[in-house]
Amino acid sequence: MLRKTHRPATILFLHLPKTAGISLRSVFFQGYEDAQIFRIEPNDPVSSIRQLKSLSKRERRHLKLVTGHTLWGAHYFVEAPFLYVTMLRDPVERVLSSFSYIRSLPSHFLYEEMHASEMSLKKFLTWKKSQFEVENQQTKLLAGVFNTKKACTQDVYKQAVEHLEKYCLVGLTEHFAQSLTMFENILELEHAEVPKSNVTHQRLRRTEIEPDVLEEIHRRNQYDLALYSKAEKLFTETLENPTSVLSTKKMSSSSRDKNAENCDFILI
Image 1 (cartoon, rainbow, N blue to C red):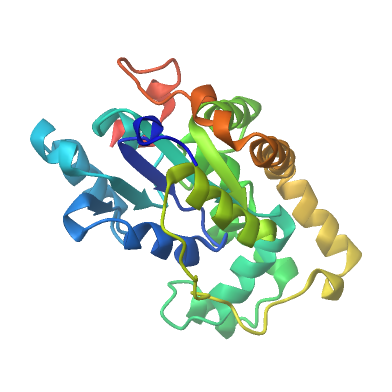
Image 2: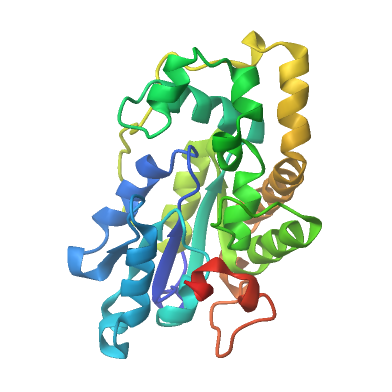
């Protein structure tokens, strides 16, 4: 366990959708009072981001945890030292989970249209309204791209890799228990039994997918697949040498880095 002086002043939990983030988020919530937590609301992220950016320095000093889907760039508006914490998921499993989740949730804005057309996974992959869900979503969010119409390019991928390597403590959904223990030890969080939250029942399994559909998921997630491979390497390195991980991360930002002008969070 690390000395208290090595702990980040602010944890930025970048919750990538369908990565078991809600279950993990509850662990962070247990360690802080409500007044120390800032939530970027998923239904109105723009208003939340503007609210965070408008906080006074005094108010920012009280924040210990900032959490949300659209979060990259928040470190410019919190106290240093900060650390991003995130979970990545196998891209194929994430797409299957997202499809199953949306079609099982009546309150989702795409639910009715999906059911009215009896939409298959194959159709879902090419549907214009679902592209942010099915194409390199993890890469975009880690790069700071929240605009659903922006394409994922090589430059976006490079930004995501840089952010992951320099700023993030990363866990993997496929190794949830190990990730949780790692976070607890490095961040000095109290151990907690984590209930499974937001679990999608009757989810499609990879073994049920036709080869051509599986190939299409791979084609649309080339950057996410490459990013996940990077995350696996970082995860293994952290497990092998957890005591030095914080010393390798950039935990302060006195000025905006070269990618700031491309970050949607900054532009809002």
